[in-house]
Length: 171
Image (cartoon, rainbow, N blue to C red; front, side, top):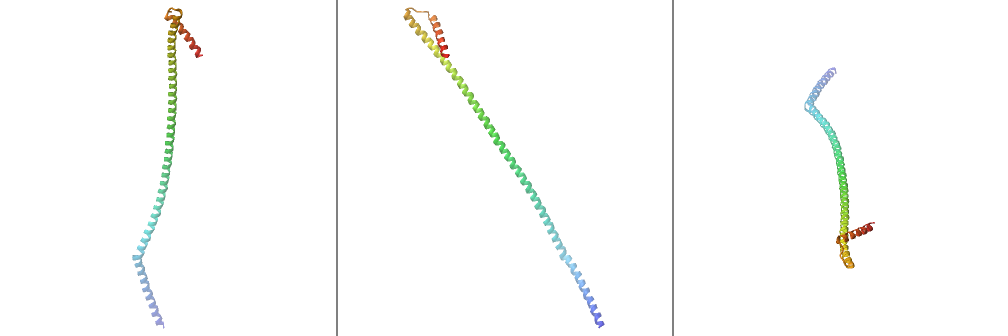
């Protein structure tokens, strides 16, 4: 039995040594053919995920900057539009004031011209009336007195009378 035991133990060590060699050989083959590619694949995957995260963060930052720029541009456009509207209102107000001032000036000029025309017409009418009255007075006086008066004396007398009438009507 002892011999049987020794043989069993020798077989056991032989089997163990064979299994150990097979295990080491299998591990070495796994390391060469499987572990390296799997590790490389895992590392590549890890790098890709890290790059995707970095890219997503950069995209988010770029998008936030773009939103800020667009908001600033929009605010600038609104301010510019408000300025344009204010300028247009101001220009419109100035033009309105100029038109009103010009209309008032034109109306005043027309009024002054009309007053001058009225005064001239009045003077012309008075001069015509003086001449007519002087001629009529001379004719009447000639018939009444039966003699001709000096025309210059008669005209001076009538002019003073008409001036008195003109002053009487003006007051």
